[in-house]
Length: 218
Image (cartoon, rainbow, N blue to C red):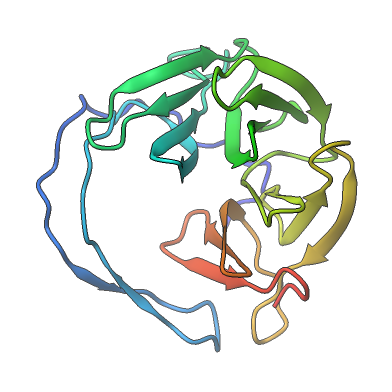
């Protein structure tokens, strides 16, 4: 696997299409020693295939999506934060990032939306209802995925480390290193979700999603 600083692909995808619902069951492969779970597709929704999706979260009937692509990409300066109707895929509200920023992980906590940027070490805070910018903050490394546990923001940076941030001061309050059952670090942790006390993370460049105990990193 490449290092976390390796360039990400920026090729635009085909024209948006609506895919019919095809329920299926998929079996995944474990990183090593963990219990392996399959999943079943229960619905499919229309989505703009040209959107370089980086952050995605569904809250209160609204899909919040953050996309990447900056001035070094082709096409340049395409990073946005949008609120979308899940059923139709249509944008309800949208705000465009400055062209030098490559948008990354997104999470919604209370009445605020938080969004990371990739290598600019900058995060943004928006009003949940209006998407008006409220604040910016600095992070100590690359920004990849973002979620929260109700008390803390949790972010990834493409390494095996999860970082915890205070949602008010936006200062880092702790870290945990993620390791598999063999004790090896699980690198390329990307987009995050917090579900029933666990952090779910997709491992970039693989088809694996890992479930992580945020207290121990196991």
